[in-house]
Length: 410
Image (cartoon, rainbow, N blue to C red; front, side, top):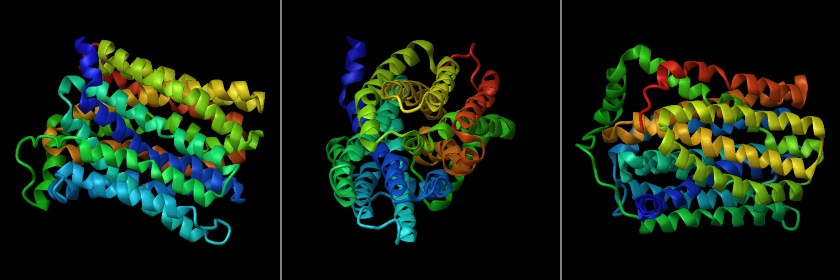
């Protein structure tokens, strides 16, 4: 019964809804905007370079100290910032659909950059909220919940959004997708504000310097560099494989409706199963061993894309590949990495330290993935996915140093 009370308590449910709110803007850019641009005639190379509009996710640690330092309004230090960013994201997502990619591509890029900046800001405070509102023994479960809620949010732009795009205007589609930000806003207004641990930063100098000083002092420069290299590389192969997934499906000959149905029929249930299995496995395995086991499954899921590239437009196979990737990558691998990063962040400097760690996770998504279009154009989809599979393993070789199997911290 204790396990069920831990899963169903209000704080974990708040993490669930906030994870959904956090994931919706990113997946709107990844899936809905990508399909919108592809349908408008933007070529694969430009679509690959379009990944650069996600650079705020990589550099969010630069303004995270500001959000650690200041309290916004009466809702508190965490909820005040969450409410503001969620309202802005509703407006930005909805307004994006009013633009014409063929004649206003520059404005589209500017709009998407503004969207990702506000989205990254929401991520800073949501991650800090999760780390502070949950007890240490709930961090693994909280990581599984938020990662899978984050991924489940992709079903709105990739399933609902793409299906609606076949029967209504893009402008209407973007406003409907944007309206789902109110899920997070309602949760923000109802959820409790977490307790403050220790002394909050008294000025911007403390907010900037102390989090980095504590991180380096903990294990020395060598361990700090190895730690950051590991979290940078752990999702490299998977991030590259899914960077232009919608374009890949369209190139194979699938319609937006087929892609949306596959996401809806298998992606939702696979993400849900991944959340349940990931949470249970992480409690039993511990964070370190979960990184080993889930990392292998995450890598294997990439081979499904290579299989689909060879098989062609088979709707059943599309659903299988979609489902296994949703189960293995966000459900397992990403959840373990989030728990690992959460455990490594000091509660006194949650927003800044976790923003630094998660920024390194997004580097492959933002900068390396921007070259994906050129790689695909040069070697084709099948060879590209084999390359992604190989790139999934450098981080695995670091595990004995950064997360030893025998030192299985929970």
